[in-house]
Amino acid sequence: QQASLDDLAADYAGIYLNHHIGASPQESVWIDEDSLACQQSMFQVRACYASHGLEVPDWRLRADDHLVYQLQFVAQLLGKDHDLQSLEEAAIFMDEHLLRWLGNFGERVLKRCSTAYFAGAAAVTAAYCEELRDILAELLQQPRPSFAEIEKRMQPRRQQQAVPVAFVPGLGPAV
Image 1 (cartoon, one colour):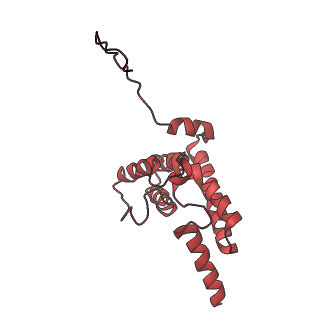
Image 2 (cartoon, one colour):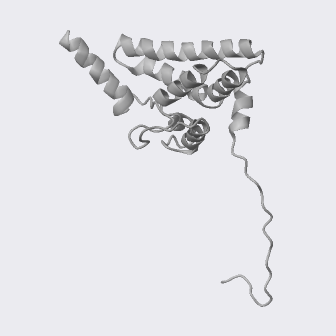
């Protein structure tokens, strides 16, 4: 019995605390091109929470884009009065954040963790969220956007500014 609990504790630490298996439970690590934590997607998620008057207790202990907070946020949206707006917001959040990385996280945990418990939990969580999103699409009578559509939507919008070329007579390239 104690050996099993120790195995679970070690596996938990390897997944959620010291990243021994290389499966971060933070969105930005999966989305950022350099696989860095606390990047742009974390701030996007934070803005989603703030638009509903929510914030994480201490982002230094657990970042805003952590799996736990994203699941809690979806639950918060679904726990409202079941109005269409809340359901649509949950679907959009899942598309733009949670489902962009959760499948990869679940697959990596499944393949690399040491216990069947966490392998199963990761697989079930990812599958449940995919099924939930399908149900939301059906309820909202809106098809799920494709991966390419979501990626395009989430690309940063950069405004190109014309830079005037300044010419100063008498100044040439330095040699």
